[in-house]
Length: 225
Image 1 (cartoon, rainbow, N blue to C red):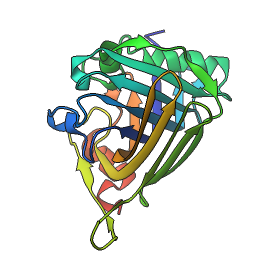
Image 2: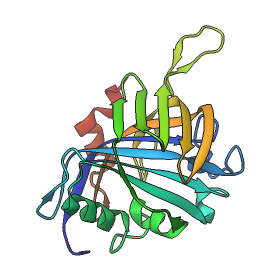
Image 3: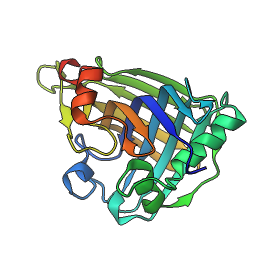
């Protein structure tokens, strides 16, 4: 399975219990001492060998007792119920990180996540608009999370904050929003006006599928706003 060539590309959102601006990206401790929340992906186009991954939506709730690089994490994968058996097997092979270079997304998570909860196959609502800095992730009875623009507390106007990581391992550039999230499944959390980021993603066997310059041209990263 590890020799199969694959590529997935699409839309990404993250929610965590930290204040706006993920401290882990700057080698700081989580705001609350721990880190929990949800990440979600929509594959606009992709493949795992001969298996089309187009349109696949998947997510995961998570909990880390300290900063994520310390490990000890819990994660519960959630895959849209419409995914075929072949797509499910392909996604699990990708998410395992097996055979992928050290320091790439799924390789890292295979190390820092020590407890995988039973995967769920459920209706998974995903609405995403990076320009408006809005997103909705909803799995009834499991998790609901929503991103809205950060607002200036004095003027009530939208505030744009962009994260730029030319050496990123999840994304190169992301638009930051204000996240409200509640997990009621195996992994529980409940917070509002915390960190959320929206970004384009593209991964393959080697990690990030494009260089920073290629991604800027492909997604118009300098012209997102």
